[in-house]
Amino acid sequence: MRLAVLSDIHSNLEALRACVEHARGQGARRYAFLGDLVGYGADPVACLELIQELLGTEGIAVLGNHDQAALTGWCDEMGFEARDAIYWTREQFRERHYAFLRSLPLTARHRDFFFVHASAEYPEKWTYVTDGTQAARCMNASQAPVTLVGHVHHQLLYHTPEVGRPRSFHPTAGIPVPLSRQRRWLALVGSVGQPRDGNQAAAYAMLDDEQDTITFFRVVYDYLEAARKIVAAGLPERFARRLETAS
Image (cartoon, rainbow, N blue to C red; front, side, top):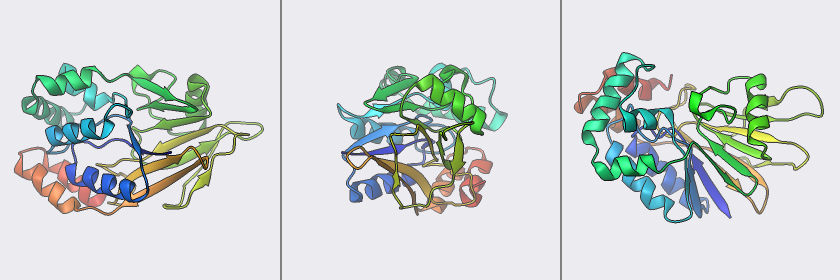
């Protein structure tokens, strides 16, 4: 079974559609979403409704910090422009959208896989996994062979060596990585809707639990149209420019 893992969509409908079409072409049968479904972008309602459709009865989704802010209206820890996007997003929602966000847990587990937006150590604190020490804490907290994480907007794969803290490497897009059962793994799957690694292409990953592999992908999409819609909606222009620069 192939499970497409997507994170940090950030209301970017163009990127989401492109990744879903690509994942279907790669044989995806189920979908997992690692949070930050909304925020920044111009299509929060359309993105949530497509995600709900994709989840069906067997999909997996967890809450992200932008989702929580949109749900509660509390976003004091965010910058002013991010707050503006959250306030605008809340104006677009109806009760059914809030109900969906309320239904999302902070973490989820399926077989050997653990899903979380930030770190499994304290998922409610929205900690970024940015080095081997934080990766080790996250993996120790999840107690799973494979932990899937978003939040960082970069693609990276950590693995446990025989001794010492986890090591990382940048996966090559489209090349399956065997998930040896002799190690534990932590995958930062990247961002569908707002990459920040200098590459405008949307990012997601695919798990194959029959072959025991994970494959990272980059998908070209119409980021200029997504940026245009941000400006047209009256959202902060910086979020549009960020799609163009991927920084």
